[in-house]
Length: 69
Image 1 (cartoon, rainbow, N blue to C red):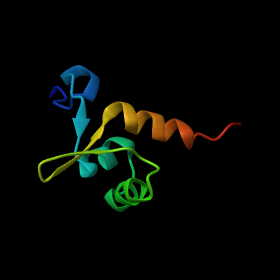
Image 2 (image 1 turned 135 degrees about the horizontal axis):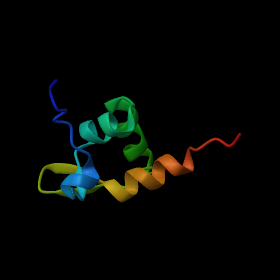
Image 3 (image 1 turned 120 degrees about the vertical axis):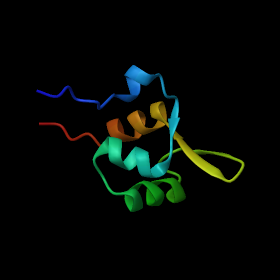
């Protein structure tokens, strides 16, 4: 039986990810992430030509969309 090679962001200590990776982590489309960034709903940062989303910002954004029972 093979061991899973999937690691979580917490295990690797990653602080920020690309919008595509943020979408993958959240289980939503990349376009949705880019729309949230452009509307100002999801905070991001830009270093050089690179757009990044901090894991904390992604987590906070997801919590804002949480639906109660």
